[in-house]
Length: 280
Image 1 (tube, helix red, strand yellow):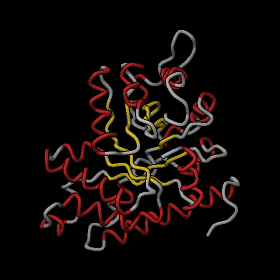
Image 2 (image 1 turned 180 degrees about the vertical axis):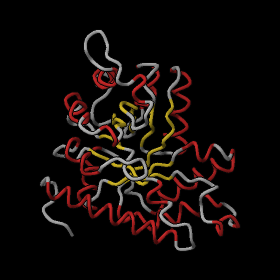
Image 3 (image 1 turned 120 degrees about the horizontal axis):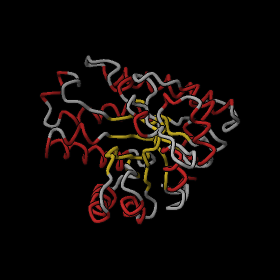
Image 4 (image 1 turned 90 degrees about the vertical axis):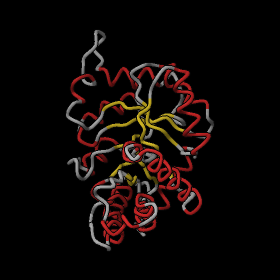
């Protein structure tokens, strides 16, 4: 999916919501445990209920890998279901890969050739040669970890370097040399507030994947105020607040309602910024 196609989907759906599929076998409704594939049954219901209100889905690989072969089968079935029934959705494998070039090449082949997602989250710590193998697939995206929402982000990402840059700024500046804003996005945590202004000084036109709204306490209004550009430039992720909105047999309807509420708030933001003319 190209950057322009993603922007058109945002305008058409009046939403920049990404639904995180952090599907925990210990948290899904109990009645689903009798299904042949409980994780996929849960994901399918969530997707059907929320697809009208979002533009992206982000399965977190840890929740699938924790169940071994069966969990990975659920992940692949989820991606295939999205491809078949909701082809306009941007699919992010939240895998946080990053290794020497040869190994990264195998990760890239797995996600882009075999599973066929649109994007993979990648840790930049090992540098250019660990990221470049993900960038050889036309139409696919790398989403680099830059300034995350967890408390430990202060340990390294905010470290001031000899030239005055903080480490997250070094990541932003150096990675611009590897690919354009047509192929790289950045993870910027919703809890970072005004630091979005510093991010935008370095990457004014890139899309940002923004986790941390909802259960982690990030403010959508603050993210929009400091992080939105004239092409939106945001994919704001919400996971637990949507997918675990209810634990009864009515869980999917509750998830859809929660996604609708967020989408309506996002439509207001897009209208206020002149990206759409009016809400529908």
